[in-house]
Image 1 (cartoon, rainbow, N blue to C red):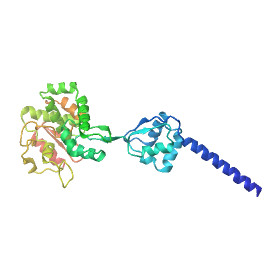
Image 2: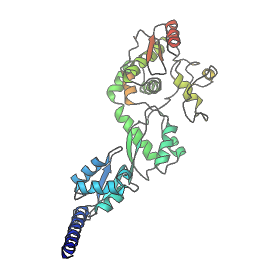
Image 3: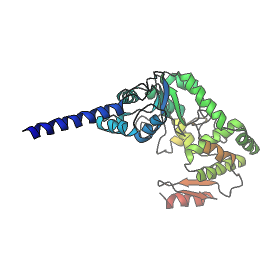
Length: 318
C-alpha cells in the first residue's frame, strides 16, 4: 500500500514538472511589450512561419509552438498578411493573433485580367466598391502581381499602386525597343494585351507578337479572337468576361475592338498584360515567315505561311 502511494506521488510530481516545463516553453520570451510588425507571406507554410517567429524573438520555443499549433488545430488557420505582435505575448496569444484578421492582406491579380475581373477579387478582399476601382483604373496599365494592401485601403490607392508598378516594369529599354518597331508606347501596350490573351508561354507569346506585328505592317487585319471577346463583355451563362466559343455572328459585332471588321490596333488595351507579353512585343520580329497561328485544345501551337496551311492545321488538330 505504501509503495503504491509513493508511486502515485512520484507520478504526480513528474506530471507537475512536465506541465511546468511545457508552460514555460509556451510563455512569452520577453517582458518587452513594444509592438512589432510580422508578415506572413501568401502560401507560406506553418513551419516557415514558426521559423520566422523564432528569428524575430517572438516565441520562446519552436518545437513547443509547433506542437501547440497542431494540437490546437490553429496551425491550419494562420492567415496571410501583416500582424502586430509583441515578444511579451504567450504562444497562445501569438497564435490567436495570427489566426485573426490581419492589418494588411495579400491579393493576387492575374495577368490577362481586365479591370472588372480585378475589381471582383479586390471587392472580396477589401471594403472596396467595384465601380470606384473601375473608375480609378486604366485598362492595360494595372500591373498583374501579388500585392500586400492595408485592409482599409481605398480604391484609388490600389489603382495608383498598380499603375506605379506598371511604370516600373515598362522600362525605358522596353519602350525604346517598341518604338524601334514603329509603334508608340501606347500601341506597344495594346499589342501586348492582345498577345497576353492569345498566347500562354513566353516562346509562343513572341511568335504571336511577331505574327501580329507583321499583319500590322502589311495592312492585314489582326483577326484576334481575344478582341472580339473583349467587345462582347460579360457572359452571364458562362459567368466569365471571356466567351469561350465564338460564333460567326460574334465576329460581326459592330465594335472598334473588332479586329475582324477593322484593320489596325483597337483603340485601347483589352486586358492588363504581364511583363512577359510586353517583352514579347519588344522582341517581336515582323520578318517572321508566318502569317497565321493556331492553338489546339491541348495548348499546342501551330504556325502557317498561307491561309491554306492554316486551315489544314485547324482541320488536323481539332
